[in-house]
Image 1: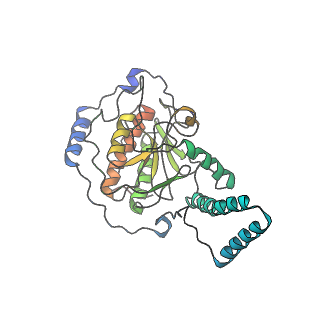
Image 2: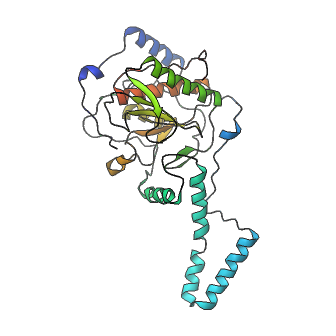
Image 3: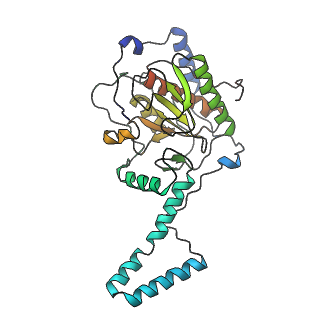
Amino acid sequence: MSATTVSTPPSVLELPPNNSQLTDLTKREAARVTVPTPEVVSQGPAHACLVQQPILQINLTGKGLVATIASLVFINLILKQYWTCLMVLLSPLPFIVYNDYRNFISLGPGGTPPTLAGWLKITYLRFFALSNPYAPVAFAGPINPPTGYYKRSTTWLPKRAGLRPTIAGIAPHRQIDQPGCPEMYQKLRWSIEDLARRRPELVATDTSCFEKKGLALFALNPINATCRGEICHIHHSDRSMHMNLHPDDAKLVLENGWGERHPLAKGGWLRRYVPREFVMVYAPRNKTELEFVGRIIEAAGFWVSGQRLDLAVEDELALA
């Protein structure tokens, strides 16, 4: 998988919005400068929170405690003092590994098989993960398109209300608290499918190429290489999203608290897993947040396809 850019005729990229589009965009930007506190909504039991166990929290049942003590006594009787001390020091390791493996499985299905081999692969990749997923990606050299969807505007996306949610994992990479609104999740799915119906010459929906499951939106003629031109995909388990964004647009998403970079979005040889522009966007909790998430998806569509896409997320949309 590569994140290199593909050249394309300037006429495809340099399509400024018409006057009515500019007027509508200006009105929307003027009207939406803050995001209200999320509404309290009923969360379905299947999407409450993804449980994660602290890997250093060791809970032993009676049988486990007896077995551990007996093992240490036996080792002390048959081995020298040096080896006994070493085994005592290493005794928490099996429990730590077990907790970490259980955390990996509890994140649910994703791009990595939920097996011991999958866990070992992710454990290895952790050594190369981003140290700061909130720092924008630094680009050197030419980039196509040269500016983001919103032309470096800083007013199209306000600060997200509240603290960031807790994020865990690499693949799967999931939001484990602040679950999104079920109704907004269904509206977002419907809107993505509706966009593919309205613009069949530009985009289509299919199963995510990154996740190997879940709904995804694809550009039919991508100008920036992702996985088969994937623009974004939605996670059914936590209602968050992954998408590919122009660095200008991603910078505002990161700074204003709407998302964070994928742990492996570092470029170089890690592009075989995800592009350097790969960003998680948090699950929308209400209608206002859904509208802004829709605008972020439009920006992702511009980065991958070079075209302007209108994702409608109005109240009157019928649910799928």
